[in-house]
Image (tube, rainbow, N blue to C red):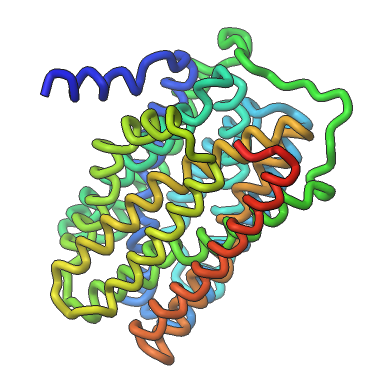
Length: 403
């Protein structure tokens, strides 16, 4: 037991102080985004927007994210990650507070688009900052620590969010979201000001390769769009499935989603530390993570036993723990060929594009054809993503770039 505890602590050693501050700031910020998992339920039950129109609101969510990530990547390369992060967090805080005062379908669509367009300029800037403050040998674990902070916040967020909804309604969530973004801004200003924080691995590429000409990276991008597409269902279609088919309460849904974050908190860092020392490649592990996520949807159609929801969530969590840190590490490594902001923005944009089509597609298919067909459809898309990653492995192996 003592050895297990020591190995767990060793997984966290060697990371820079700045990365730890980034993780704490991310935790504060992510704890406040507790409205996101409940957004589809809020729109349908409080604002009485139809399930079909909820899908279009979620599409605006994704469109805003794509615009924000694209602008964020450009601005990061132009004015630097620090300025982008500060302005994004502060503005997002006030926009989240204002979002609760929108009540028509058109207003909500515009409001969600604007919030995400501003909020997601933060993401490519944060990844560049994390890369800059990480030693080359620690980058995958730095990614994992940030994800750990995200998921720890996400573990606390939905559980607390469900209780807030039960006690005072959805309005309180918007206030908490906004205030935590503003608090994270002050933390960022205090600890990551460039005058105080010294770069560790800042990349200056005199002859950058355009990301548009990096064909293997585009194959990787397409696979990640599909990976993210099916994973997005856990934040929209899946919550309605829990409620409509298995009759879970909002509090129970929050606790089930919280299981994801809690499992990641316990297991992801030591798991990634172990996998980094193995002979498995980053693309191979990304492929395995996607396979586990596909299985998480498949098992839901095998039985109506309520315990299968926990099994499905654990499979998806394991797939996420392996697939996302390794794919992120691959993107950071590949970004040294060109402008980091553009490369990492493209990686994040895979998730944003998936938001545009993933939420809406899942909700529309579930509305017209039912949840069973929806889960099989997601399995099919995941299989295409697996084939793309297999093809990418062959290309990288041929070019001697597989690692």
